[in-house]
Image (cartoon, rainbow, N blue to C red; front, side, top):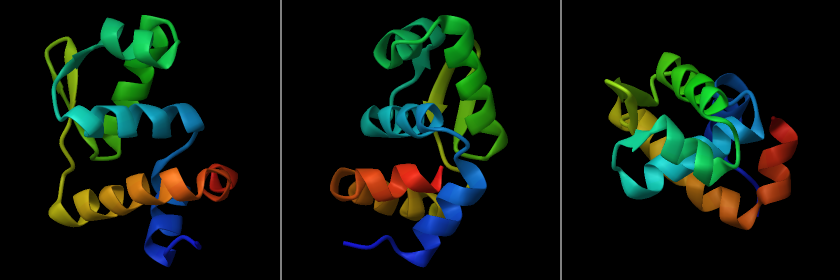
Length: 101
């Protein structure tokens, strides 16, 4: 199944690495706030790398920082819908999504 043009544009514009994508989808999957340690542990990266990912996602309007934690909270409903589509597409088209990054 091919990716929609909107998902393609989103990945190219907002997702600089597979690690960013994995962090985004992990945060989205629970909707809960995660500490940098929890996020890093789940992504198998040091806490400082998790913090960099969280900061980058916040700059893109995908997450918010809550003190020392990060939570999935897209800036707009439109972004949330595209991320939902991306999450569904990633399970079906992992290689196609990864090649855009």
